[in-house]
Every structure is written in structure tokens, then in C-alpha cells.
Image (cartoon, rainbow, N blue to C red; front, side):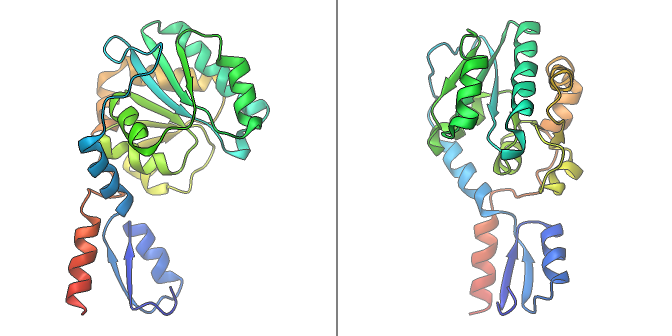
Length: 226
């Protein structure tokens, strides 16, 4: 970045950080190309079927958990919050692709695997993940990438962490940090499930990471500088 002629930053904050780091090239805010890929995939992603999951009759929550900071007791707290939620809302189901790391996989299988409202799967290929994003009502996740991607499809994201490297999402209102306390997970999720206005405020908030035209903007600038 210190010697590049052109920089294509995903957000205004990223551009500011790049400028502050001493980069000498021109900086353009274009959005993140990952949103372009997501929206392209969403146009053709087929509906995904999972045994035990009824997209038409159930409100499906997509969950992902894998970060090292959530191993151990925090993982148990997350699972406990999910179980409380499913008990409170019988019409709700949880779709949870399991990380391959046994430190994460095995406790989640033990804690959640016997619940009929929980569907545990292997990690999803990207087209199946996008289809799941389209079909779900909201996300419970500690993933960084999903904090950028899910809001592009109008899905609120509750982040199972105490801090995030995506501050733009917090400022925009597309995601909310809720930590891993089981009671907090229950409270914050039921607020979205029960309060239509709160849900719509998050789902309709502008996604700061792009609108699907990042590649178009990058190509235009490259042509201009040829």
C-alpha cells in the first residue's frame, strides 16, 4: 500500500485509515467486491433443503460459531441461549453449520444435537450459504464476513462477541454486538422476533460495505488511469 498508485477502499473509514497510514496513491471508496459476488450468487442460488427444516412454516435463525475467543465456557453460554430461545419460540428453528474444529464441533453437537428444532450441518458451500442467508430471518454469529454480507440481503445480525473489527456495521445499525451471555442472547433475539419496527430498522439500514457495484467502480477508475 505504500507504493501503490491506486487504492480501492471498501468504506469511508477504511479510506481514512489508509490515508492515515501514509499511503501515497489515490484512494477511491468503492464498496467491497465481496458484496458484488454475494448479490450475483443470490440471483441464482437455489432454495436449500435440510432434513428437519421447514422454511415455509418456521422462522429460521442461521448461526455460526467458531472464534477462539468463544471456546469453552462462552460456547456453552451461547448454546444455552439458543436453547432458551427455541423453547420460548416453538415456531423457530436453528440452522447451524458446524466448524470442522472438534473444539467447537463436539460441544455444540453434545449441547444442541438432540433438540428437534436444531439442524446441524457440515460447512456449507458458498451457493448453499447464500441460499440459507436468503431464507433465514436473522443471524447469530461470531463471523466477521457475515457481518458484511448478511445486511446486503436485509438480514439483521446479532454478533456473539464483545467487540468487532467491523465498526462501520455497528455505526450503520446493520449489526449489534450482544456478547455470549445466554440471557442477553435470548433478550436481543426475541426483541427482533417480536418487534417488527426494530427488525425493519436493522434489516433496512444501509449496508456500509457496498451495493454490488464495487467492481464497476474499480473498472471505471482503472480505465480512467490507463
